[in-house]
Image (tube, rainbow, N blue to C red; front, side, top):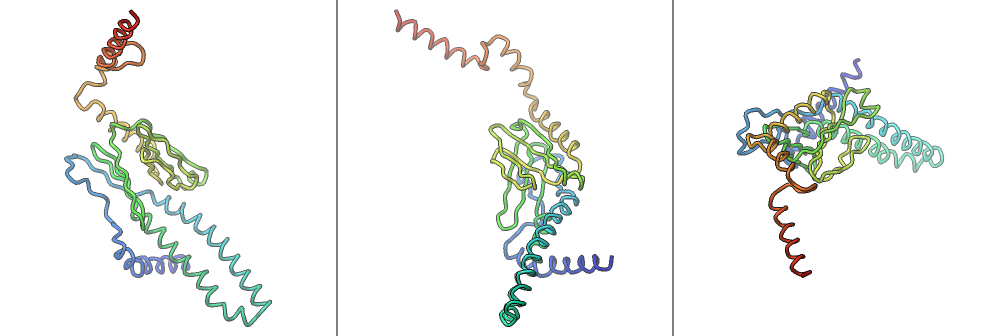
Length: 251
């Protein structure tokens, strides 16, 4: 318990002190993205669940032990084989072992704090990134599917990924939550209430689809009088003109 508190204090000191200068230099935004010019009545901004941070830390600790143990064993082997060379290279070895671990640990917290999901009445906006900030804005009218993905380790931490696909979308989501997605797909990582969030997005999709225009009622009625595959009278008229032209050419 005491050791955990010491690590927590040390990480907070690094995060709020040393890394704060780097984030200021990189102009990393800490606040959620603003929807400029929007007239939305309800705007909900939130980060991934805390379980997502613990989930990412698990892979961090696994990688840390695997790499650091290999480096320590290599240094000890060098120390026994050539003591003088091992002693001279000791500062370099320990620098490589310790400093990157501290930076990656802080970067995990920073990436968590700079990941935002914003749901307005009309759009969904996703922002993440430290060095390169990536923002994706999705309008509810263009949404084709909302799915939930959860791996066994994510299940252990009670989190899931919510994948929002729009027209023409089709990216892939990595097993560790990385974003390998096209511009038509949005990934919301580390969600602890995925079913609730999916229903909320679908409710906004249904509201956006209706929008007082009546399209959801007019189109099925129009399609009842159209040949299969046609959706507008203009398309039917174009086909009739092509047919008449073919008849005149054949006569």
